[in-house]
Image: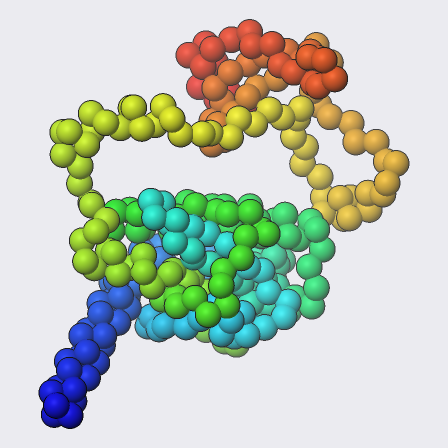
Length: 287
């Protein structure tokens, strides 16, 4: 019996090792796509010919990942879609300082690691994270799943198993961005549980399924561009003047795409919008 148990242990270890290699391989085979996603999300990396090196994938926990990134860091919680498995993008302090310097047009040679993050700096990094999430989602589309950003308050269990790749920027001191995807999501990829193609019956069901899905409808009063220094100088009681006129129509967006135009009104004690134009009536460049 002990011999049988020994054989089962060996077979189990071999199977587990093979599964782990397949999971890490699913990340490693997309190293070039990950690097390309980063270049497209942060254009100055291309303009200034910044070297990008993607390290081999490894398994780690979210606790280990946060320890490796150090403080301060910028963490972006994600989820796979479909599946809802957790994922993360993390920027260490050196990468934060390097990226903020490059985005603001400074000399990359003079970039210093961030020591703290102001709200405007977090906003800049958040915009970059949105772009990077979309690009990475495209990179993993061939595997049958995408990535979507979660609220900053979303957490990942500290002991969750993640397949992780580190992306190093530049040739000198390490400036690291880390992508981590839950092991179970990549196991589904390697086992073929995420379909990469749909048959005709699947396609016929899509409109019915989408009709029950919920979308976030966003209505903006206006957008402004201001210098970081001006934003940091804002205090309670200050007035921010928008470019939107009182009589202007407001545009409602879904996923950053204009879908409706309407005028502000009230409904009881709440602000409301009276729709005046449908999506097809909007100009292609809808603002």
